[in-house]
Length: 541
Image (cartoon, rainbow, N blue to C red):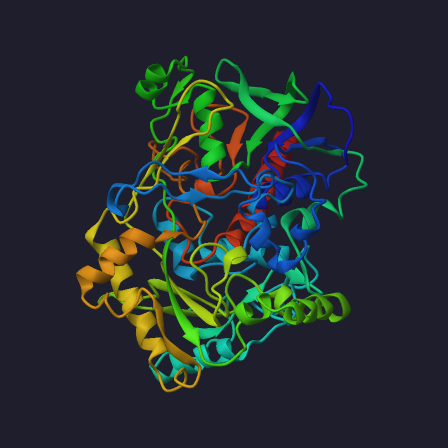
């Protein structure tokens, strides 16, 4: 699985995140091909990467996260928004909130309608099922025995159960499976965990493949550019241990760096909008205007409430005895607050007139904070996060300079449209109505954030502008499509460049309606199918 960097291989996969781990592992199932997986980060040895609630310590870690920042956001009063992205084996699947949400069936059917042949829900369902080891067992929509563990929560806080009852009280249906026939309704999330431990893409896919002699995983390898021979990608330039290397690919280079790193590497290699490349001092290898455009992300606003009873994680976190019980529960039984994901109960709801499917997702958390989980409120609290599922706003990824060591320029362009602003305001208002139900009344002492002074729609929007943040789902910057303006075609091949594909969240034409990790793993599985099918066709020709 590790060793000296070779001069060449059949396939080079850049980025050991959700899609990259799945893709590299699947390609290496064929012993006749050699696969090298490049990861800029380190091995996943930090113990907090494997404890579910460890995201509180790793998401903004100085070395395990890229700790990116947007530029000043015009609609957010000029604030810059932190964008953590995983810099470790497993990528963001190693530091995320563990939620397993595929999105709506209609999301993928819409991709197909946009010209992405082979990407309808019916088309991608086999990839989801093949990846999944569903704790509840297999059925028409779920798989068992796959590499990715999907399990029920091991900690069922009474606050989360009350939140579900609150949604039912307001007329929303119960939904025991957000990845079932329909997404709408309230229920408990499932998580990517097995036996109380996180199941990142690295743990799911790379550990079972570790002994394969044809798979080499290289950590600490920062890719700096593509080796182009005319209009063909012949390899990757990379920096490792202070030295420059070239790794050649006899078959293909496949970028799996995510919605920021993949377009960034294309731009550094001279593939992108010609005018921008020239302005930045990059020689134009291929004018592909869509690279870095179409950036989408889910935006959230968090409501916090003071709790009447000591069942909040805040109480346990601030008590020496509570911390002892949390540690003991996890050590002895793999249960308790240390298994809590970034959302225990959830609700998918429609808040805008005319929405045929849910347009807002709620993450319910049995704790509250102004900043990160390392700084919980000193009183017992809970959080209701409202997140718009299908934003209209579009941003961009561009170069700051030709230096590969410089981070990309991120313009998220949040709240750029009236629909996005209205959806977020209505999402906050529904969050308040949930907290005001009879089901929640015994648990809630009062609203802390935003507070009663934010009463009108304009005041609520002002609160959202001042405090709203990413929910960590950037996508769309190497858009897939059937049109010549798309960056990749439905086989994920970069238009105009041979031997080069992209397979990660950047290829999504529109962001899926939910958390993106499951969809990214599916994209890795789907890409492996596409690559192997073309290889078989070449052999048969």
